[in-house]
Amino acid sequence: MEPEEMELAGADQRLAEETSMIHTYADGTDTATPIAATSVPVEIDIRTTTLAVDEPVEVRSRFDQRWTHGFSVAEVGAGAYLLRRLSDGSVLPAWFPDDMVRPDAGR
Image (cartoon, rainbow, N blue to C red; front, side):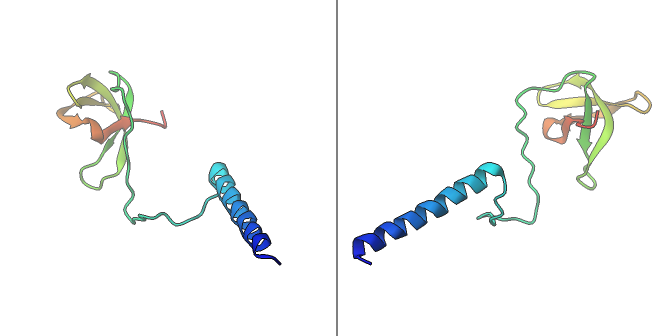
């Protein structure tokens, strides 16, 4: 095989590999290890609007960092919410920052 033919064959192989990689990313079957893998899950809030009064929400527990449902928005403040417990209708006596409150996906 001539040097030019070897070079073209190598280019064809690289093109086939890159095309395969693009299809893998596009169909969601990529299983490559991320460059910056971490064992701690990271949640990013991309919400650009505020929650509405009476909207069902979940609250992040300060104790175990889990999301707890059974609340709704009682009042909207500047970057914080007063919440109402759905079980008895009581308004909780503290403001919750917006990063500790999210829409209740199950409701």
